[in-house]
Length: 269
Image (cartoon, rainbow, N blue to C red; front, side):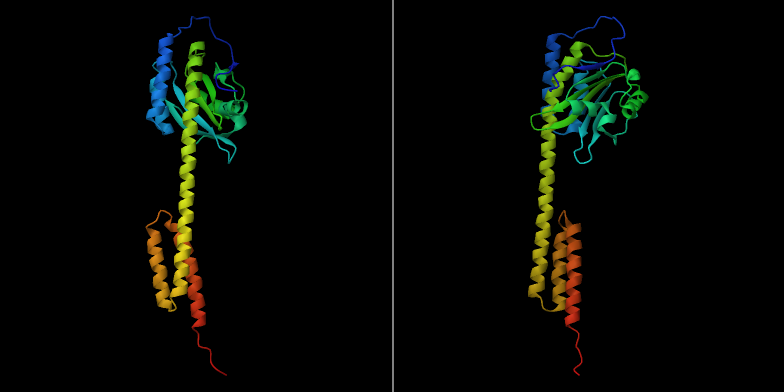
């Protein structure tokens, strides 16, 4: 279910105050601002920092964060946090899916609105941190594209029942755009990681080839050591020099041991 779907609401409105709806042109302008922010900031920390400033011109909230699902550990991991108030939420936060609102949203693919965190009985580890930071309203939306279910984006306020229906719609529409930006950023990170892995493998194979050539072409022990030393010097200039040098040292030790054994003059009986 997309983030534009129905909201799962926890808690009722605390009063009957009139809600001020921002004009339609203001909401449209805010979404254009989101598009500009995404275009200007390919990195997620920069994007969320800018989004906080831009969206607060139309919607009042105090915290914006990004929580991603870690497929390796199965945890929901805090990736970016931007706030206008002091918070005690650690940037290293990583919790099981059932212990954090973002996990529920990621799992069920539905937005979750908690009008008053003091009345929330689930997600105790996360809610405790939010309350310690003075947060009261918490709104979480899934970040999902046809390619992946990445995680969730959260808007929070220090006021109880802070968001109007108009605010919620605007946040949903913003989340749909942010989902694409997050997906693109994660795809780029995967591509960079793959390129780095290829570079490591390339340097490893190059080292193997150079040492093999040294073993074949240098019969004298001193020449062999000189050849291996030259290969190590070239490896040090590489970004992957440490594993390459470790491999070179191991091969060199084995080769020297074999050469030393073959150089022993056994007495003739």
